[in-house]
Image (cartoon, rainbow, N blue to C red; front, top):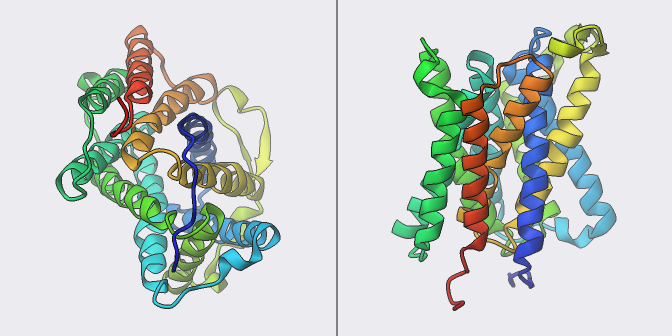
Length: 313
């Protein structure tokens, strides 16, 4: 099959990642409230995948119906992308934040971009500029400051294990998506990815056992918004639309303009947004050292964006 023609627009690509990271950062708090209702991480992941699948298929069908056509032998890559990338990233993220503070979970998850850079340099034979490595180091240092890792006390070991697995599958997701957008438009790639993820969860957790009563409950929004209540289904809709369809589409679309390594670095804005939202909403602490850490992360992101692509002088 012929590759999808593309015109690289790095500025547009970086803007897409920044918006996606902000949406992902806010989504963490919404998901945490939804999980407090008794809805399990597995079931929230299943509902998220199914809802996103329906939305993305409709979007692709309306915009470019032909883009959904499955080419010969392509289903294997799409199945791996859907199960090992889409489904696993969400599952292990939810499992991690169920046991860890959102900031610590994201710090560990964002070892993923470092793994992407190592893969690109070692196996992909991609020249990763020194400025990008420095940007990765700055951003990870900033994340350590933001979560105050030295004063976190006893950390749930299983939660850390879940977050480490999430880092690996996040790296795999970025690399698979970067490969996929060479042959498919982003909405079509994601539609197939979420379809295979939904099929996977349907086998693991049949829909007839879905806890409908839990989704119908009304729960407090916790923290500063504890006086407000919303039905769990409304939180799930938020997770599907603004926490999944929109940011995933933006991230995959950005991979048509910038490399997976750079997307991973810029996506580190997510923990900054998540920490600020957790402070404003869930009443989690925000000390001066965390603010300093956020500044360091932002410095790393800016540095990554100023690194010229290979081939430019």
